[in-house]
Amino acid sequence: MSNGNTVVVGRVRVYVTEDRDKVVRAVTNMVRFPHLETIERTDLYELLEGVAYGRESLESLRRIIRNQKTLDVARSYMSRTMRGRSFSFDLHKQAAYAGVAVFCSTHSESPLGPISFRVEAENPQAVLDWLATPTVDGVRVDELAKRNLKRKTIRRHDNRLAAGDEFF
Image: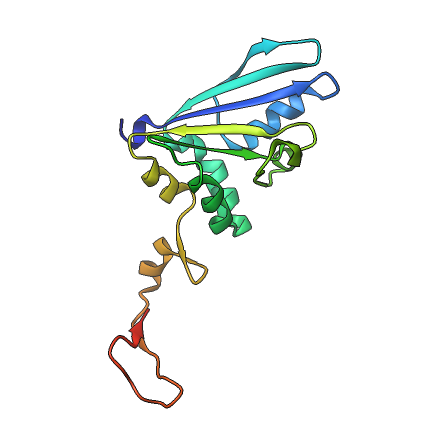
């Protein structure tokens, strides 16, 4: 499985009190699924599932996380669920409808339940690094090279240099 073979699965419950079209919009604001289908139906809710292939399906979420400047938070939530060839995360349903990525630690943080995503890939760490790029002092590592940052010398309080005092 290569990055091109990344599989993204999204699931969300649509309760009878909710507008199905708005829930679908919340999901597709975050991840581009070709379609969402009903995989379970009860008297209380309909469970929708979408499957997308390729990390490009995560492009909207990637852009949102970058614009919100929440890369470190997103990365933290996703990293803690890394298991084998996958990682997962939950997003607040109402925030997603508004185009905002709010990560949930528990299902109760989203009053009508979260949108749950699972990302599977041969190298899930590479997908995570692309989706929620690591930062150094708040600057994305992919931007460090573009800025062509030079090494600068840091002096100690006594204005003397010691071995290892240089850093980016």
